[in-house]
Image 1 (cartoon, helix red, strand yellow):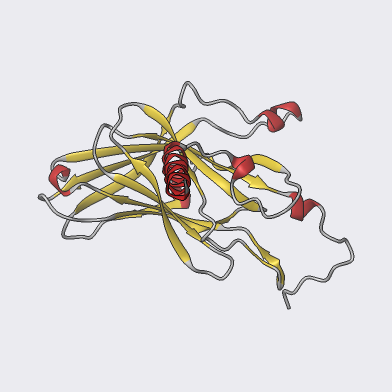
Image 2: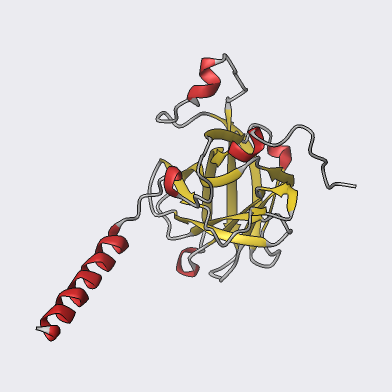
Length: 234
């Protein structure tokens, strides 16, 4: 009887593990919940309207890279409801385009850096961006910084699709966005992106387009901070 009971428990544990492994949906309401209440809000961090805000680079002996803006927008992109309700209208006419010319087949890395860090208020749950992938096996990563200045490279995914696609990633709890001892240090900063090309596909020309970098962030602590508290920034 005891052996049968242990076997049943083992089967339940295996079944639970399988179900958990198949659950890949990134629900912002359930990511990194460390307080009884949340105030989730979607925020547009950058619409890539100004190419001068971004600098791109590839090792000089691997190829040439240029970037510029193009008129256009993903047809499936929707405006942020909260902004539309209050009549906020930001310029959203252009997308950022990159062109890479490889010298030869090579293992390389391409950086897309913002001229200054993009600070995100609150505790970031998910990050998303519209991308044209051109059906290559290249991997795109977002580079972020935690409250203590430590960098993290978080994969957005492979660019093995054609046309516009909204790529979304959850910010893992290993990225420290809050510390109980430092009330003035909250959230992440977005430093840019890293493109890791598939070496077998680093030949000829490659084109990449990006638009509308957004986050879903929890602003509960920001909106409920004591008005008479003193900032530790001196």
